[in-house]
Length: 254
Image 1 (cartoon, helix red, strand yellow):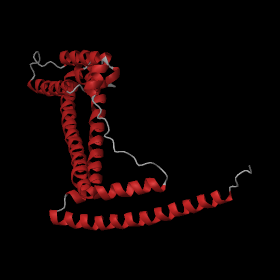
Image 2 (cartoon, rainbow, N blue to C red; image 1 turned 135 degrees about the horizontal axis):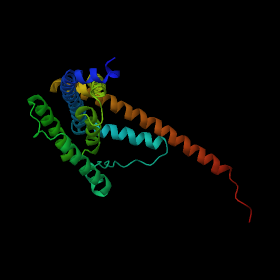
Image 3 (cartoon, rainbow, N blue to C red; image 1 turned 180 degrees about the vertical axis):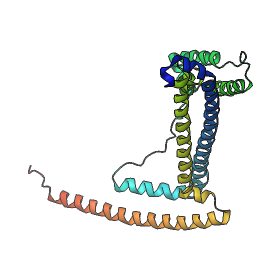
């Protein structure tokens, strides 16, 4: 067995390093495909959200709001006020947490030393290091601490920190499989989102959208009238019960 024979392992080292080089290239390609799918997924979700808030709600929002108000009244709750959710800011978190900011810089310095391409003569290896360093710089500029942590963990396999060539090959093969599965997952998510009714409406022509708006408006108006009738019955019943209870109450004699 090659892993039990140190002499055989040494003789196989150039071959193993060649496999590592190929696997590193595959990892980078899989990452690129995954990031493209992730970007497409986020972009699609953002477009749908913008369409819903800026177009759909501006056209039908008053009817939706009216129905919600009627539902709240029927449940005996006070109407809710619309409040904007505070946007999470990683930059703000870093400013408020000096330990995270310190860790960000420490990890970045480690990665910059590990992936610095200047001393590498091999053209393919230098190209890989340049690409990886570009990713690391982008993560650092975005204050993406989780991204830098992932690159630091991957550095063991990619740069051979304390691992044999066989171990590096094992981890890199696992990375290729995982990245491929994640890309497949986001492809499926994109297809699911495309089947969303709001997404389908967003992609219709102007005339088709207007037809949907009119149909939805009529349905919402019907729902509002229905809720109003129900609310009146509920309020009338409540008043009748209160009157009955009041009439049954006897005042104490003086």
